[in-house]
Length: 106
Image (cartoon, rainbow, N blue to C red):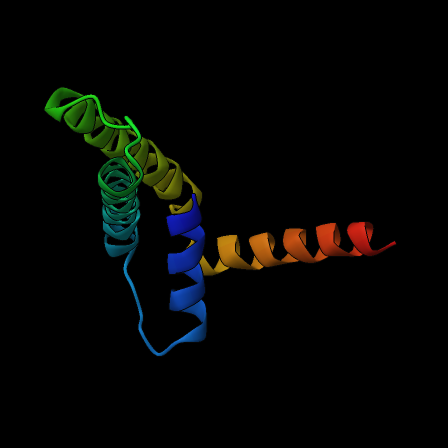
């Protein structure tokens, strides 16, 4: 969902105009990228600190498959949220975020 929010901000506040399909693609790829960074950090901590975060190739591949599954689920949520219109969804999201910020400030 972090990838979904990030790509909506990119779409809204830059000159880059993204289609709904490209947004969904970004969400899936973003989740895989974050998973890869996590696996790299586990590998690095195992080598430098001597921890045992990675149990082998099977552990890494299962983690990456679960990252892919999570990305597909988030992409599906993005699809259903965007099918009524990207601008409408973004406006509602920003309005909700502003309301939550006001509540936390008080």
